[in-house]
Length: 420
Image (tube, rainbow, N blue to C red; front, side, top):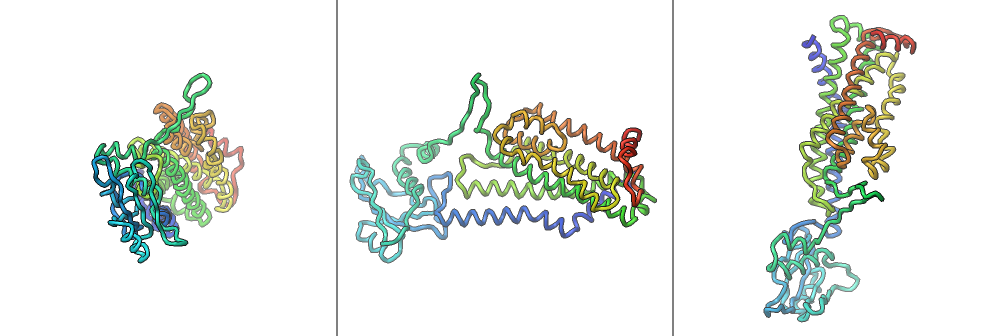
């Protein structure tokens, strides 16, 4: 039995991964992520960039070049601005006096000229010179970093300097009238973003793989290929082989999407200034995402297989499959409520319903709104319903796999499910 099951699984995997549509769909997310990064990078470069960390920047190939004249005098009698001249895509070039800087400005060697007066420490005044009708110059953030870095770099360490440049990141905790914690916005942003993105991709991958299973069964019944297959296979061997093969194809697709999502988030954190640091998802998040994918695919794939058995053609099967797809994506309808109250009653209920558990459970886990026991309960309920779905679908396979041209009556289906 095992050898024939694996034979079917290998065949389904090879056929599915060889489809042009599957390969295009699998490559769509990495390509879109790459295009998004390129677009964001170009946008940030156009507006001058805004990198979140590090006081000394290396000049980019297309860095904005500005000049400055340092007339300021510190308490020790030395000039204040002597280093940290590469900041946020802006290169600060020193000039000995205003005449030299003005000449460079007129020759378009620099986009703007900043003059730090002798009494800068007392007044904080900086004079910006630029050509008429020009909006060139350093971004406010780049100029601030340049000034602060030169003022305090020798007095504090790197961490203290970063806190001077970027004093804080605000996190909010809200309490109910009774004083209990009702919401916490300071959860790991990277974990939540990954869980949200992975949840969307998970549902797409699960429904795609289970859809291939439904399509394959319907076509084999319509073309009478099922008779040939069942001459050498038992119904349960065919069912489990298809589930394994298409599940492996879906897992491969999900792995490619997840890798591209992780890479996108890591690179996004280097391009865009975010209120939290993006890092690779934790091992716990990856394990939970994998568990929801495997159980979610097994459940939806089994339900789709049952629909393929009791329907007479592919069109009819696809029409009925809508009633499976809609519950699976229903958490998106309540996304505002789920994001606002990931530990609310609605979120708790949806994480225990097998049709909505994969997406809702993963979102709640990423938001830190579900305990390990709650995650185990959600996965346990999903596993129990998956096992029940497998048992009932095996009975349908044995009874209706060779039924052509007519749909079994609802009463007869219920009787088959109950008695086997």
